[in-house]
Length: 219
Image 1: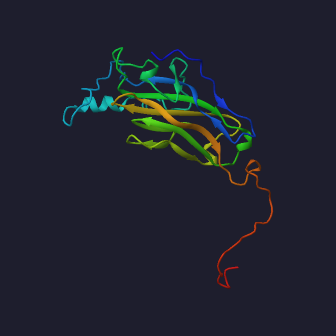
Image 2: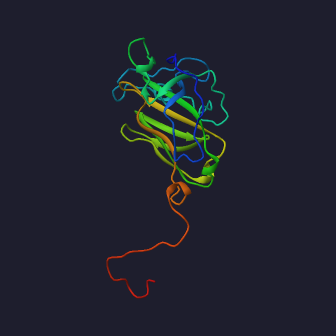
Image 3: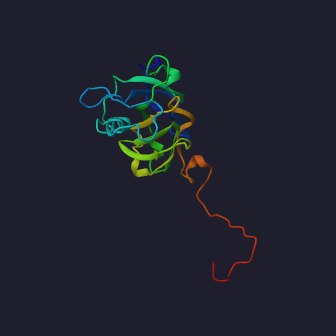
């Protein structure tokens, strides 16, 4: 069971806000049950090469994707909740009451994108997955991290975004070493349109300064 925290509410911001924080309460579910209801078997902890069977390897991939955990219309109201950023073991997600859970899991949340951001490219930051992860936006895979280290830094095109409406975030995280989760870094959604009114630019002519002679035919 997840730690007891506040019921998650969709993230959002004012039309004039340059960014929306995505740190806070997220829905959370371990991916440790097969579609037939039987428990997954991840094999030995800290398995060495050759110790994992094909069944172990399949279970370690999780079944959430085929169960629609990434989807835009999924009812996740029965899921638990966790705080993001934060390791899941530190919030009570443990495999034997003592050690942090090792395996795949899912996070979900929603964000209401300001209507004023219509037509702008956005930048999505979802911190660092420990150890690896896949990010989904409105059911579409938008980023994948296959080894520990990188942070999610995801460009979103205007046509991927529902401005003035709810958008769905889902993040798959898989960890088989120490404590897992979305453990650190920045969690935000930001407008990155360079010429929006909030960027300080006004329509008009631009001046170009150069420090060397230009070919006569360049202008």
